[in-house]
Image 1 (cartoon, helix red, strand yellow):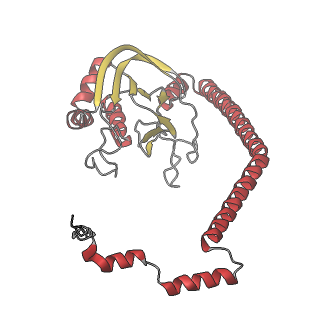
Image 2: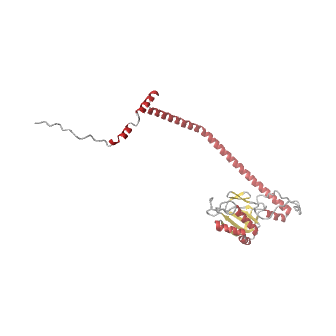
Image 3: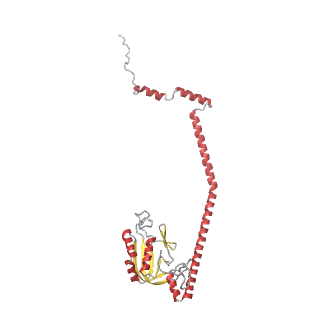
Amino acid sequence: MPQQPPIRSTSAPPVRPDASMSLLNNVMDHSLDEGYAEAAARRDAEEGGLPSTLRAKLWLAAGLVLAALVVTVGAAQARISAPVVAKERDELIDRINAETSTADELEKSVEKLRDEVGARQRAALRAHGGDTGERIALLAGATPVRGPGVKLVVDDARESGSDGGGPRGSGGFSDTGRVRDRDMQRVVNGLWESGAEAIAINGQRLTSLSAIRAAGDAVLVDNRPLVPPYTVLAVGNGKKLSAAFQDSADGRYLQSLQQNFDIRTSISDQEEVRLPAAPSLIVRTAEPGAADAGKGDGQGTADTGKGTS
């Protein structure tokens, strides 16, 4: 039987999918030039034979140890200084409380002395003037009063805020629907002009020496801050006083504030209102004199007329 020659496979080996990208394969397989590799090996040998990766790990470990040391030292210092800071804080709180108590005591002393001065002034007026002294004390606000009158309440708008619209008047304030010092000035002057005999705002008696001013958004009466709503009590003939004020220019001004800026107002007749005495009456310039005093020497006398600047 004849022998057949061995059968050999004629199929070619499989072709690599990236055979056409031999240049990229060479770059990927030999990303580090042999010269750089030799230089790195020679440097490792000169520096003690430590590989660069091991050396990097050592540097990282050293950095971590140093960072841990800094954190530990900081924590130790904070622990040491914490009692000192706490002690200083407690001392500061104690000082604040002590000074606050001292200020409260001084305020009480001032109020007591003010009441004593007012009582002595009223006694002196009664002793030297009789009925005239009583009338002067009444007009000057040195004595409490009661009688029929009106109650006028002026309050900010419900939606008043700190970033309102355009300016109102010439006072430099932005319109926020808030009652301003100049508004209360016009209200008070309008009541005086309409026949009020005595006026108080939020229990603060007004005199010929009173001043209504502003400090930011706060309204001050004789340097005392008031908060809305502003309750104005005026002694006088209730119905006539109310009608005269509402018909006056200042009453119409208050109505325009209500219509244009939503400021809330209300006025009502009262059978009796009670007004306290003014806290203190201090005249710094005027001096009592004879009937002809002030004719030629340029000196004036205390003004007991009504009006508020």
